[in-house]
Image (tube, rainbow, N blue to C red; front, side):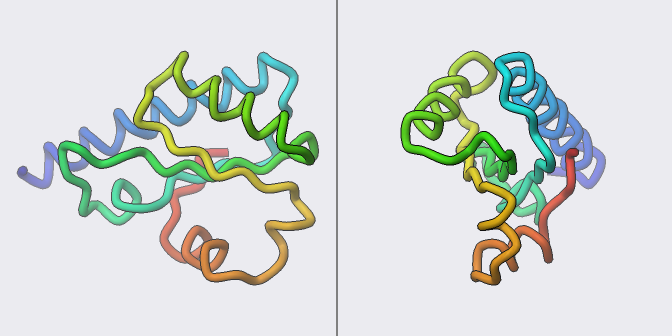
Length: 108
């Protein structure tokens, strides 16, 4: 894949992530921050790569909400793999948060 194709694909994926974030917000999940991370953010994706998305909201506080967030991805793109955080948990240091902050692309 050429550099131009890679950049175009990443633009398309970022658009999908924006749609997903809008979809969550339309369903009363106010998103404080959202990041694209993983292979698409690093530019080393394959045709079968999933779309790793980190979303942060005060509403993410129980398992029922987590399940709903996972279900809503079907409306946009089944490849979306959401990782959800409450803001208080995202501020804690852990390897995944470090990865997202180091290599992720902020969408919101």
